[in-house]
Image (cartoon, rainbow, N blue to C red):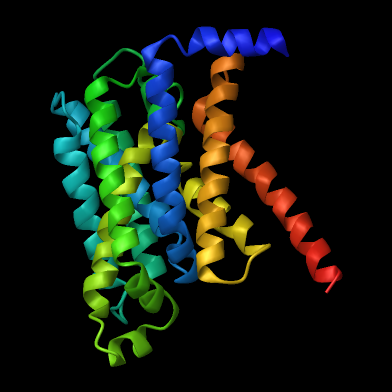
Length: 283
C-alpha cells in the first residue's frame, strides 16, 4: 500500500495528471447535475445523440485542419441540442426518433469523412480515441483546462441559480407554465448546458460513453433516495468519486481512462441497487 501511494505521489508531480484530475472532477460534477434532470424528463439519451453529433463535428474540424476544434464542435452541438428540443415537440418527429436520426447520421458521416480525408496514417487509432476517450485526457493543455474550468463553473452556477425553476420544469411542465414559468426558455437552457457538458466530456470518456456519465450516477442515487435534492447531491458525489477513482486507476495501471470510469460507475450502481433493495426490504 505504501508503494502505491509513493507511485501516486510521483505521478502527481506531472502537470498532465493534475490537469486530468481537475477536468475529470469538473465534468463529472456537471454531468451528474444535468443527469438527474434528463433522466427524470425521460430524455437521458440526448447525451448519446449529441455526443455523436460532436464526433461528426470533430471529424469536420480535423479534415479542415482547424487547430482549435471547439470553434466548430461547440456551436454545432449546441445548435443540434436546440433542434432536438424543437423536433421533440413535433408530433411528426418524436424526440427519440430525432435523437436516433442525428446519432446515426452524425456518426456515419464523421467516420466517412475521416476515411475519405485522413489526417494521419492510423485512422483506426484516431477513431477509437475519439469514440472511447483513450488516454486523450492525459494530454490536456493548460488552455483546455482553463476553458473547462470556466464552462464548468458556468454550468454549475446556472444550475444553482435556476434550481427551483429547473425543479418545476423537470417534474410538471404544465404546472410550471401555469405558475408563470417560461418552460420553453428553461428547456432551452437545459439543452444548451447539456450540449456544453457533452463537448467537454469527449476528452474524458469519448463520444460513445458520455451517456454513462449522465445516466449511471443519477440512477444509482435514485435506488436509495426519493427526493430531488437528495438524489442530486448523491448523484454528484457518486459521479465525482467514480471519476477520481477511474482516473487514478487508469494512471496507475495504464487502462483506458473512459472505460475505467464507466466501469467504476457500473460497480457503484450495483452497490446502490443492492442497498436500495435492502432498505426497501426493511421498511
